[in-house]
Amino acid sequence: MSRQVDGSVSLTDAQRQRLHARYGNRVTAVAQDARSQARNRELALERLREKLAAGLVVPKRRRATRPTKSAKERRLDTKRRRSERKAARRPPSIED
Image 1 (cartoon, helix red, strand yellow):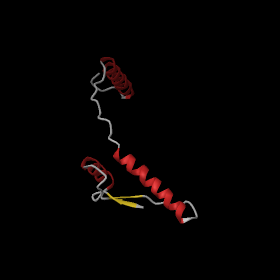
Image 2 (cartoon, rainbow, N blue to C red; image 1 turned 180 degrees about the horizontal axis):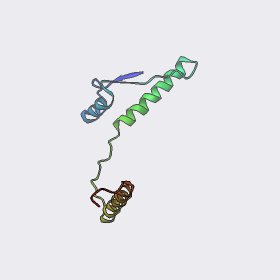
Image 3 (cartoon, rainbow, N blue to C red; image 1 turned 30 degrees about the vertical axis):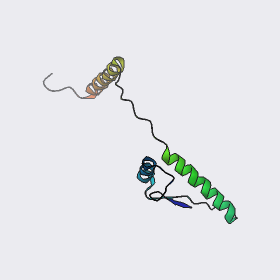
Image 4 (cartoon, rainbow, N blue to C red; image 1 turned 60 degrees about the vertical axis):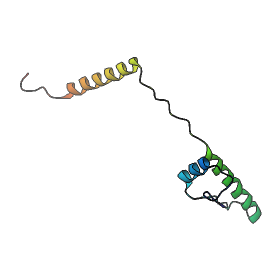
């Protein structure tokens, strides 16, 4: 089963653009699970419906967040400890 995205009159322009960006000009679904052609056609149609519904979902906008002050301090403290541990592994320099 396949469906032409650009030629569909049942979709709005925004929906058409969303599907086109996600799947291209044609949305397809294949089913070869059952032995009968009629059942496979039903399965393919159901998968096509699911694919179209998933393609039309508008993703949530990401809300920009900043790390908290304590998270920054934890990160810097961990970096400091790691640096000290690695510095302790090095042989002492000649200048010391």
